[in-house]
Length: 69
Image (cartoon, rainbow, N blue to C red; front, top):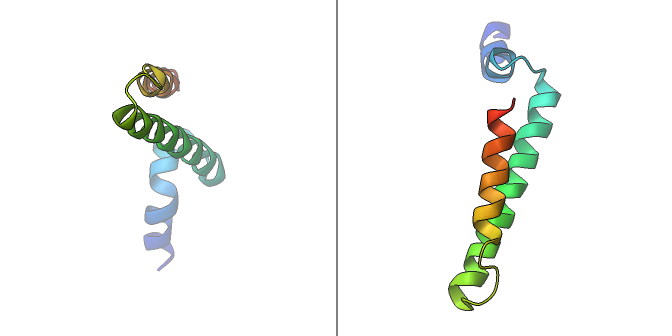
């Protein structure tokens, strides 16, 4: 049982040189960023003159964040 829990919870964070909570914090902040980009895209879809570059700028920011890890 312990090895299964280790695989589920710790194997991936370890593979990217992070602890469990460190990885949770990074992944959560990334998810929030994606949520913001998605919201901006919805606003832009309804009212095209708003949030013209917000979603693409946020996605670019997130890409840079993940590339520089």
